[in-house]
Image 1: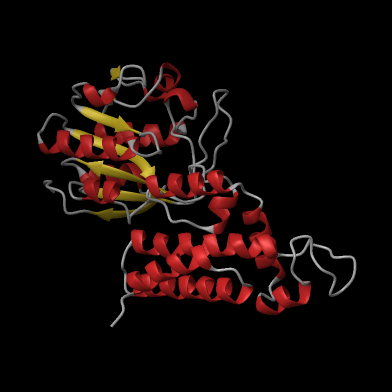
Image 2 (image 1 turned 180 degrees about the vertical axis):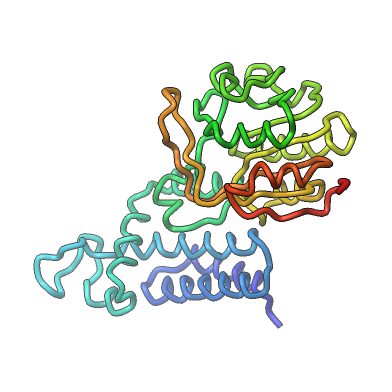
Length: 307
């Protein structure tokens, strides 16, 4: 019996050879079915993205055949060599045709680069993300991107841990609010430094840095180099880096709404496209819950802690 992955590999080969609208639509439909199968059977992000990548490549080819948005007369040939009724019959949703046209307008090298950026950040590939440029959900809240954590989250973290001894992914401006005793900037490369005590961390959100910082804080907590930590990240529960920290988490706050990060002038900006979570590593999950309970739902984890 042919597997979903083998079916996708076949579709990928057919896509390189496809020339007609019917062939492209068949490949597009196979990719949709494969994506649905991957979700239903929980095959993971890699399988879903494999299907979505082929779907988008097929859609881009179809978009190249699409007529202009407003043909002068019904049945007129579009500027890309296809009669409007033929494509509209295959894809009656006008919104979908518009998306196909937008995909076709992206140069192929840039199109592939956007897909690779999303895969490298372990994000789900979608039409919207690809059309928006494949950019991260939000710039990280410290360092050279100059986005900062709202003070109320820092205050809660300080309340949960007592004080903040170290911020390994920060900047001088960010530390005006964090007030960590020691902090490392991008130039310092906090990954190469020794951390200590109670750690606040809002890591860079782009790969591979987010994975490196997540692995580092898990390793340092396991080795008892640090005592406690509060980590603000996207609630990307499907990623390896998020799961790595959850192994040691004794509590997590899934924040209500989306964090509105601050610009250098302290104004709300840079709101992400997904929600965030604050992960707590330490032996005082009750104290963490008391500090964050008004901000979202608290779940207790399997990390080692005392009640």
